[in-house]
Image (cartoon, rainbow, N blue to C red):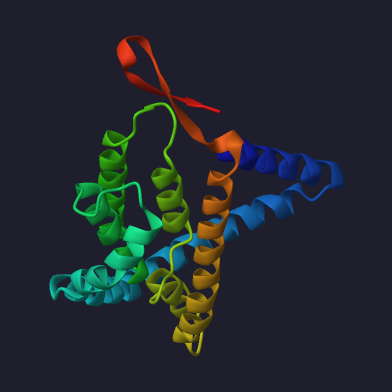
Length: 210
């Protein structure tokens, strides 16, 4: 869908440019912006390498595991259907901890592992469980303390104080995470999105949507 939207924007741009007689300007603008994109990407290499290095040190020093210990009591409350000692719980905690510290690359494999383990607890394999939905909502809106990528972009763009984004980022992501959790928990209570247990043949428990 995204590819279709971008393709439509490009085609419409060229058509409008041809109709209005500005096709040369459209072409020149496309070339100029393509050049700017390359320059921006190259400019990000140094800053990103620095921040990723700092984050890697934080990861190896056990900082993520320290944050994980603080998160565990909260995670148990948010995910009552997931046993506290289940691998899914550990993977979710590590994923959220990495996201909080801005370690997106480290968070991804933990997120995939968490979903894999949550699926093992899922009795209806073609329907996401409440835990899956809540985890995805938190993962998407995750609280971020150090927005390394944003800082790198601002620095590359010549910002005088690129780290000033840290405060607003903490506030914005905290609000987004709280909102995501409230939305997920609220929708879970609606009959339309609940899964009920029914007994099938031989007394076997099956699941179906209400």
